[in-house]
Image (cartoon, rainbow, N blue to C red):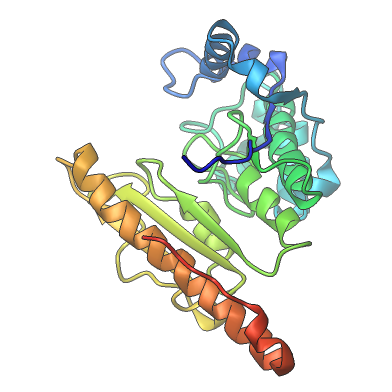
Length: 275
């Protein structure tokens, strides 16, 4: 049997993350992140990885994507001063699905901080796999909260990765379309976004098969809209070939660019994609 080298796994977790509370009856429950952490401890999985406490992302870090006025608003709004921010709450889509709760800004800081730190760790080649269960808030827009998401930690993490890598492949398997991440990179060919999601009278209502990117980003947004009734076998039969082709296409494009820029090194690359 062929031996495989162990991949270094790191995991970002702050014990305070489970204290944040969106409100009674709200489906978004940060407490589940703490429950996941407890499972990780009780099953002994923590022995297989390095655990780090994420830093709180600064306003400067978050405004690498989000607008200055939006981040100032998130930093200022609290349950006890909401009446002073009625216009801004409407403008930034904060109120119902994305409520104001105690510690909102700190929650965003921890979520974003974990994903940015994970990207830095990958850039330094200090780990092969990084996990941030406090992140994944893929609906947040540049100046707007959406779908329980306020700060798009994924976009911030990808921007960090782009400092060291020419291209990034983003794969989203949430049941909802990854609209915020797709929108952020819709016109660039440096990020390919691939989203598998339920589609048809379902939030956020975006992610049509024909949405493929624009300008330099044309064909770099890949959407796989799915209907009810999907089972594991059917999902795998779609996921595996699509991701294999996406990886193969990006690998081929990388080789093509390298060949163009340094023709004398064209035989240096030998990339095999197993399907």
